[in-house]
Image (cartoon, rainbow, N blue to C red; front, side, top):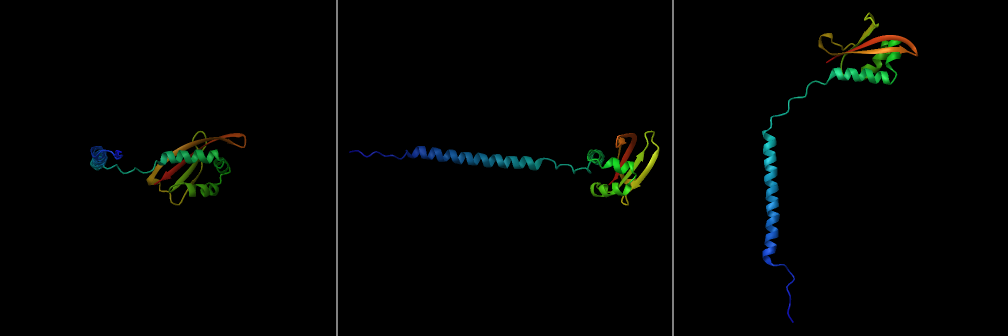
Length: 144
């Protein structure tokens, strides 16, 4: 009776192991190349100041959609308006309310508002309150 050898030949073993080594070596070269390429890129420019103009718009739209802007504007309640804006405005703010022909009706300025450092000014129209047409223009100014 002849005994058959069940293990693969040594040359096939060596070829499989060398392919694994080749794959590992190729991955190392790839990662080193990517690291060198990434390190040669110029650094990203510093992020600019937040977009206060867009934030002012979003803030007015959000307040109007939640139904909190018109009551404070039409009842001329700066304290109520300040209670919301103190929590949401990034720094100082000023709210001015105008008639449709740009006559200033009233204004409120937060203590931390710096007019010389104002970075955003956003007008927002209101058409009326409680079904009564009474157009007003609310201007929100934000300072850095």
